[in-house]
Length: 184
Length: 360
Image (cartoon, rainbow over all chains, first blue to last red; front, top):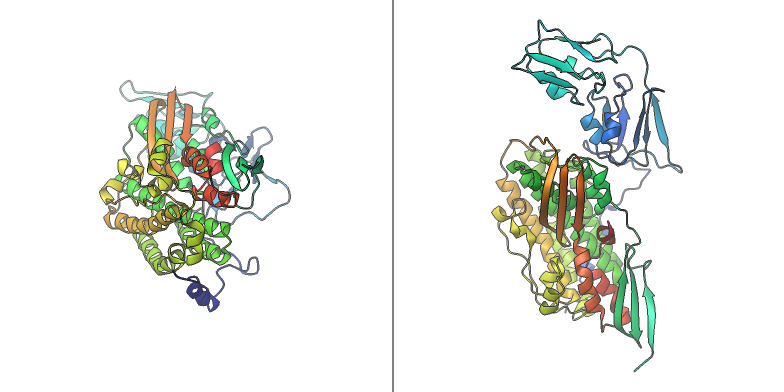
């Protein structure tokens, strides 16, 4: 029977640095992958609302009328589902946690209404149009479309867009290898 | 014969990290019967499958438990993958195995700390949790979260680990092995720990079988049962023997978990050695979920059963998780019968109750 087996461990720890961090005097070192909080690049946001649909905790609200993007910090679970599904990649995960708070904060970001420069497109908002002369019916646009609004038939050589489903994100315009698509 | 009295135990009790209530029918100092009641933290997570797409549901399911969150995420993903007939890339399977074993180490170290705290050994409790920090730091570095990882997705995993970091994981775990031996050796050898745990709350093999005990509780009673050997991940390729003790008392349950910590480190080492370099970590998942699937997985606390039913849409119709604590409660009630009232906290602790898991 061993008595005071812990003695060795305790004696050793007497001569070691404390295992705990003197927070907040000593700042916490974040890892590159730490999922701290979500940030938005308002310039690139097209208010498509996919982030809000994909959020498992309903923390994000997108208001197209008021042109605002809101996030409830206490509801957000930092899963990263929003930035993974964002077609414009305007959401980023930053490693720092948000500061402690005494109330449930809602961060609201105003999305500028100025003409968005979606790469390759002239203006944002409407459904894309296809130039039948240059289109090779490769189907990349249909594959990349975040809401499956485009239908391409390679055999029949038809290209269709459902304007009601289309959110005008401009991803198809960006991805088109022939530059045949233009946002109207 | 003394007068029978009912003493309420919990839902708030210093020894319980989570709320469970027991009505203890006692006669003098002896417990005659324990009547459990749960339902204090039911969150209705299973119902959410009807509102969240099956690809996003994984982030909800892994929040069933903060300790075996990787196991739950993996359990859900492999159930949906089984239903859709998806084959996961080999590297993803190996990485899932590594993370699952790291989860087991941190779960067991947490429990060992709580046990030490339960019998009043504060310094031992702190040293266990100090060592657990090493694993949590590795988790943060590789997944981005300390306890909720969000790396598992239907079809594979979301983040790869580069070879240098994998090497670092093995080195760090081997680095703390000596310290683990010193600290966890206290549970095995120290006379005060032994006199508190030995011969307490004996669950015989027959009872364990009859009451369907799972995980370390069943293995401490001599049942050779480990769902990892039923084909989960890459465990069959790694090859290992389940750790079994035969005494069935609190000390045996503690010993099983101590030995499993070292076994997990060995398994991680083996998995890193055999992991294929490069290659895909996920396959593309398309389409809706349809059909039914049942899946059994070994979590740090024991066997968990996952059932999912699809209806040809993006939403599952039904999801059910039978967690290990759920299965161990009947065994706990059985071993509480006839014990001293002062021993109740120890017995409740040694089944490693996770009430959030149980109630979901």
